Length: 89
Image (tube, rainbow, N blue to C red; front, side, top):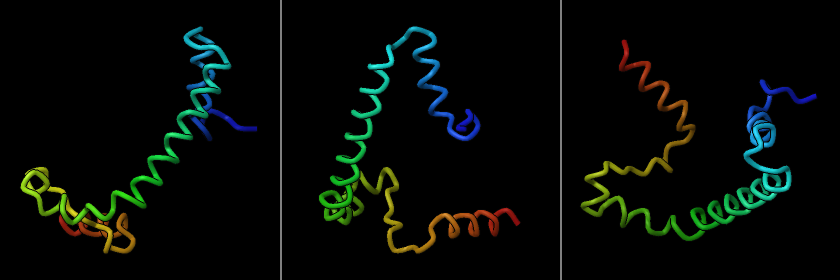
């Protein structure tokens, strides 16, 4: 059985229906639309956006926003953890 601690998104869906903000059909339709848009966004970013990354990084506005490319760092989360840990010492 899935509890709210295991998957908090289910509780949000249930509360939207329980509080009469949405119907079950609206919640299900929203889940499908959100999933579809997420898949389209993932495809767009991975197959079309990546070729513009060098231009964005070198652009003055990209430098102003401090945009960096971390794609070359393997195990990025571990890398960030180690750097933060070393900095805290």
